Amino acid sequence: MIHLLKKIMSVLASECRTRGIYLTFIMNISHLIGFIRGGLFKLLYFRNIRSSLFSLQAHSRIEIFNKRSKVYVGKFVFIRKNASIRVDFNGRLTIEEKVFINDNCNINCVNKISIGRNTKIAPNVCINDHDHNYKNTTDGHLIMGEVIIGENVWIGSNVVVLRDTVIGDNAVIAAGSVVKGNVPANTLFLNKRENKIIHYSHSKPLSEVI
Image (cartoon, rainbow, N blue to C red; front, side, top):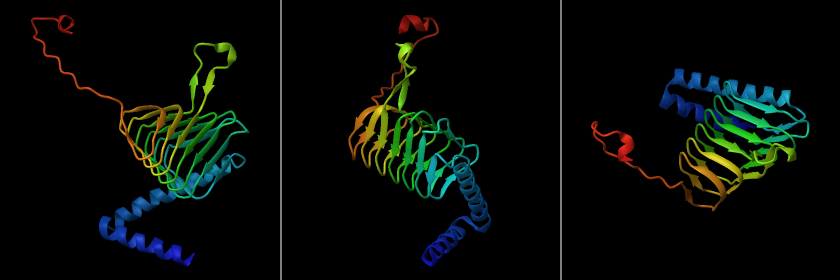
């Protein structure tokens, strides 16, 4: 405990030197409110959430819609603003320690989603372990799968992670990618992109050029 307090004081002193005392105070008040909100959601869903100390910043929510749903959140998980986490049916959502989830992310779990320790997720990322069963409405409206994200993974902005995806440790997912299937460890994943520039004159309609 004494060692932890010493470390906290050392970090605060360093932040004050680099950011200034006032901004360091404002930033840490924001962090404190986030940890309080995390604790409140843990109390709200005390039968479903098992967690250590984690931060849930303004307008971010955890919603659990089934008594069988389970959420585990490791210590020092940091979830920024406007994130939406929804768990339903027999969903099992695991977020290991020191995971960072940025603004406006969506995680929708009805079966199994696991996010490994030290993983960083950029803004506007969407992670789903299911699809809508649009072909056959008589057998249930969802097709369920799993999403397994390893340790120390970096996921760029505006990425969509679909069901039945496994992302290995230390992988990097390029911004704007749509991910489905297996991404090996220690690799960079990106969807093929091609810039195309078409020149046209005002005398010719664009439809005749394409």
